[in-house]
Amino acid sequence: MKNTFLRAGITAGLALTLSANSFAQDVHFTQFNMAPLTVNPAFTGAFNGQYRAAAIYRDQWRSVTVPFKTIAASFDAPIVHDLTTDDYLAVGVQLYNDRAGDGNLQNFSGLASVAYHKFLGEKANNALTIGLQGGYTQKSFDLSKLYFENQFDNGGFFGPQEVMKNKTDYFTVNAGVAFSHSSSENFGFTLGLSAMNLNQPNESFRKQANSQVGLGIRYAAQLGAVAYLNDRFSLRPGVLFQSQSSVSELVAGNEFHLIVGQDQFRSISTAVFAGVWYRGNDAIMINAGLEWKGVRLGVAYDYNTSNLKTASNGNGGFEIALRFVAPSPVDFARRLVYPCSRF
Image (cartoon, rainbow, N blue to C red; front, side):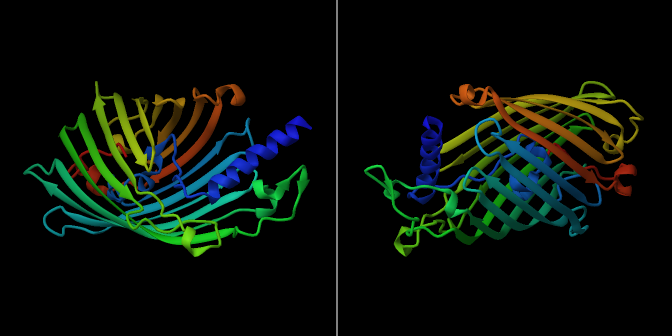
């Protein structure tokens, strides 16, 4: 009986959070480099190849409640080349669906993005990119599975909640800028800045029009690098900082990458990788996987270090991601290589 009331209390708390004048948070991934269009629209088309297709699945908090499940898929590619010298225009599409908790809170988003890549310098070893993104989001939940404070009085239960609706939808606008540089074939870095939900769309499950909640702008900064210590072994550090309303997160770490096949064309060489990451006051994360002929398969696991670790037994989230970058003859010819493909 005690567990039943505890579960009802947690569920009611979640429901009240949804209905209050608070700001919802966007989804995130441990392997954020496998879902770059969710981080910065300027990363659209920022890779060496003809096109890029990716998918990622995340399962989180299974040891605490009904697991939070997120799946995302994206496709992007350059479509107009040599606008001025080597500059090009790229487009992409990003889809994701998130399902969370006892109330089956579901978030579906479809986003389209466009980015212009301007190469700088005689060696074209610098690239400045501006990206825009827009799309549609629909959120819903199962109202029958949630309980609210005003449904309980003197130990009695009084009917369903009538001030809530179970679905809301809106359009959103995102923007970003990125700068990439390579000093040689052995070192390059990318720096990005982005802002999501620029139009602060109304988001609320309340029926009253005057209680609509504006979704907070999510600001993000990204820094990633690729540094080859020899022909086969490289370090790939990355930092991601995000802030939305009163919530922020900082992720930092490094991936160790080793080419085990032919190293003549690094973008399609057979390789293995493993990394260690830390999300501030939340989790220690590890990832590992392999690459082969443009295919990258990665898995990741979060070990919870926050105040929830007692309830979760340290268990956080599991991810599996798959990405394919179609090789480009331009890369083979060594005529133009994107300065840094960390993201």
